[in-house]
Length: 386
Image 1 (cartoon, rainbow, N blue to C red):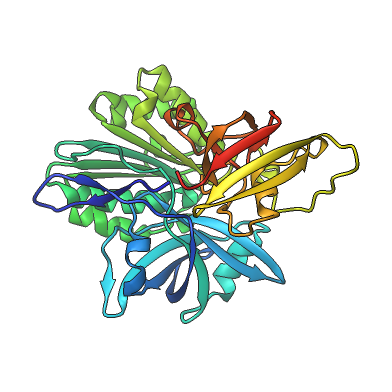
Image 2 (cartoon, helix red, strand yellow):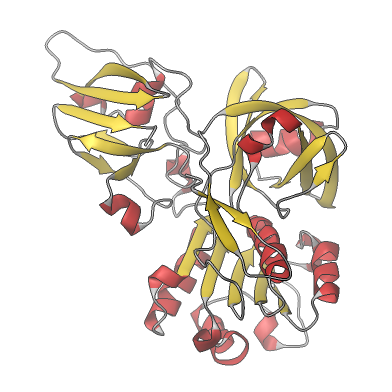
């Protein structure tokens, strides 16, 4: 979860100070809904002074939003798109970008029905798509984004460039057409502000540009050409990749094949390889028949321990079982992508179906995604508070 807070000044180096958020929802008021493209909006929330600490964040983190739409509770995660520190007379502000997905109930509702003055439940910032660098002096960061994957990179680019007069940021941003480019004016303003330190490359897959490198889909051949010409891996200190599974995986594999260490590559997905499998469990009822073999799941949340029994033949996730007795158990995507449901495995064993959120070192320390974890021993104990 959020383990650090970014403090930066334009005169000095970036430092990191510890802060940790419990994954908890708070009701916030919508301050502004700003159209970005024909099918995307930036939603800004007012953060009252009493909740300022709960909404401190690192650039690259996300917010889970919760709303009841057509009688059904829906939760979706959206990346924070503005650098930290925005203040108003009423407190602070925090913004996310929401792109309308085809058939997406929440994103369609947010784009058409969400208005200033509305109230919505917003979870404290979560996520580890953040820089591991403790000093940004003379550091070069590269971001590769597709579509709405630009959202966390907006906050990252702003912060990196403002943190040090010697830092630099290169952004490769791919869309279908120029009309699909989110934050087009904001990116142009950022380029005007830092002309020598921000390199910005718009790649359009369905429009012909003057350069063949910036026209068409980014495949392995094109990405290797970028590495040879405009990106230069030897000059890069950290990489950030955000987009659909196929693009992110292509870039990760190509970077690794050219000698870039995986520890220097941060990635975040807004879809997985199998979108249909990412719907997850939402606390569905489970019936335990007489004589059914069962697992026992013990979990601690907010200092309170609970136990729930699950039948082996149900193949139930820890999250689903926990939600049956504690509806406040944290989760958002339930697809192994956002990491909101992360907990530490204290005892017992589990298998994780998918994992797009935890780093190898987190897994080595015993952390699991409870939405994807299924017990394999008679008793499993997890702790959400660690």
